[in-house]
Image (cartoon, rainbow, N blue to C red; front, side):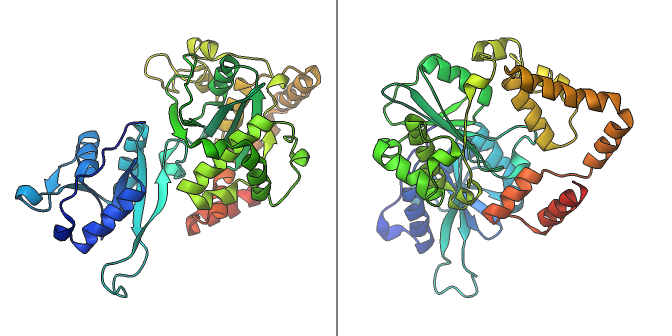
Length: 383
């Protein structure tokens, strides 16, 4: 992930109250580009402004002249999503700082807080992500007898834990899962056999601590017995899961409310497709340009809803091995092929169904607006 240089601020005596507030927030998020809300704009200062001006191709200005000049640039708050998406696509972390009190009621400078940190694995705005693809944040940690991993999509609530024997097997699993960002213990060397284009984020080793991990996961699940989720024996995977939870808590705490269930990643139940095969056969992304259009899954995809598109991708990534499970799936498909009138009615009805998984996620995170609630009600009535 690209580094963001620390700001070179003028002397404390020359700082305005607003600039002192900015620097305090920036000090708390030194690895992020800080979008600082001022009225109808998000402003960036010092090195953040220089980086954003270069990456976003926007004008770099200055608050003052001479030796006290402070580089700055800004984007309108109502169109900020596109700019944020471009920064995240380039691997930057973006901290969103909002005014958290009414300026008319403020005594002195308006109070501001960082309300969300957006990273490649924690993009939650549905306008900034591909509807038919999962938005996974993963964590990996090597152990004594296995390599543990966990991955979660905070937009849908999917959360799974698994283990493999080697780093090479892990690379294959990650190639099929397709995470946007992977957390690793600080100082851990990432092997050469690693999926391309995945952002790697080092995290403090204590977030993977074996003794704390099981307790942290149980507390998050309201004290539930992990055996009931089928993950109790995955010691290294539990360490990775705890790191995922710690990262979400540090950057977007309200998203934890949407991770209230956890499941086991059962890699042995599926045919193994290694990362090299998926890449060379252009199953999910093209070799040239890394696009979805022109891939096998794009050719196969005739789904009506985002949930169907994500389900299809998972089915392609994890082909069944169990004969009975394959037969049941074939029988279901065969039934719809034979009953064309029923299939057509279902397809027509699904046109009225929105992304229920992500709409429900917005409700859990407290970010749903009136339009989202209407869409969710309409979808549930149709289903």
